Length: 189
Image (cartoon, rainbow, N blue to C red; front, side, top):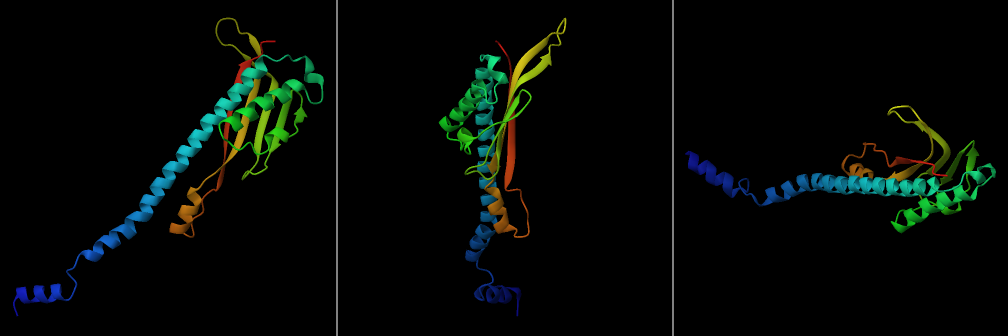
């Protein structure tokens, strides 16, 4: 038997057919493509949330800088509740779950008020408003500047952990990450 006979027998036996190779290629590439696409959308969602949180605390700090510090001796100053409301309203306006921040009560430590909320969130949102923050300028003669420091920590729920669990059942991946940002502005009053 010559080489041509073996080739014809091999091809007739179905071993030379290529129709099934496309299914195998799809089976290999589809999970990898899913990981890339979901990873991209997940990370872009996290960056988008970070941008919205940064804008919210900037608005809160900007509002706080114009408020009087005369009411800070009260147990729950209206100026602090106003800052919380500005941050909360911004989050709601940009369609970010406020985790119940609008109804949270602060814990006071000196000139810092801390709100925690976790209603309908995968973790705890923490908003801290420090009306007694100070910083020293570095140019020329140093000057101490009184400021307001507003910071937020927000629990971000990753979707990627569900995909990685399907591909690699033994893999562990953090399901929630705290995204933090802050803003500092000089007190004008």
